[in-house]
Length: 100
Ligand SMILES: [Zn+2]
Ligand SMILES: [Zn+2]
Image 1: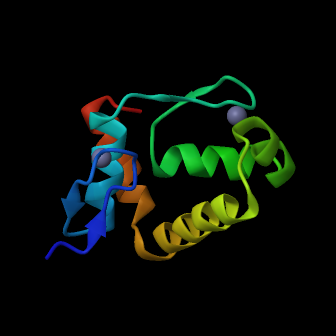
Image 2 (image 1 turned 90 degrees about the vertical axis):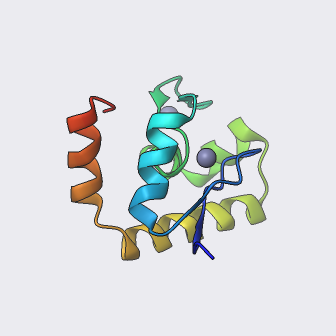
């Protein structure tokens, strides 16, 4: 069974490696509009990274009406992706596809 699942609501796509999940989220899902600053970012990992790198947890909680569990789940996803994924190669692939 494929190990990685796309966490975007209503998707359920499964993939063999984490890089494929990020590429899928970036190329096949609608872009996400950040509720804090209005920036359009790719759905999935890049949306999470944007939220936590660019904004404080307090801003995220307020804008998304999130609770601490929702924050922790996203932080866990971000940590897992960043420890497992070759993000340089993901970004390069996405640039080649014209998706970034
Ligand atoms: Zn998906
Ligand atoms: Zn933002």
